[in-house]
Image (cartoon, rainbow, N blue to C red; front, side, top):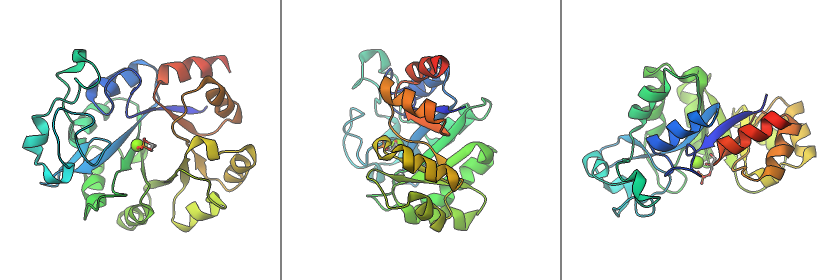
Length: 241
Ligand code: G3P
Ligand code: MG
């Protein structure tokens, strides 16, 4: 079965990367959650997509320049709808407390491709270990050095190469980094590429698959998972495929 991962939670319905979005993803029938992690000034892993807080909160500034106290004072929901005005930026730890008792899978995207967060991999890895989530967690990043670093910390973790444009032999490239799966932009996944990735035993989880046409295509291709803003729509289509 092709699993469904909620992209930043159920981000079509709720403010992305908030508890509301994660709870909604579970209610929509998602099998897993994709989320984005940065570090605060005091080096706490927090869940937010952008390098700066402006787009998704009522604050401004870089995540790396704000303390957790400052981050926690922000409203992370009103930008989406007043109904979500009590949503806060979550720490990764708060999120892990929530997800650990569920059966959801987890994809942690390390957002260290434009900002350097020294030692981020170990901080995140240790938290995941604390909550015994290793077997259900995939680490991905557009920063492929970070994926290699994760494998140095623990060679048995699952890592996935994120990329937005077609790569030459993505199966060979993933293997060269020790990654066991790819998380490509969905439009790079032509049938011949899917076939080769499968033949080389590489897991396939494209982002961000929202349209019915593409969801149907990927369910018919029987790939490992899709990452979507609307897990409810994906769930209904998977059921009818
Ligand atoms: O991890 C898949 C996807 O989230 C990557 O792009 O910008 O939505 O984090 P972005
Ligand atoms: Mg992401």
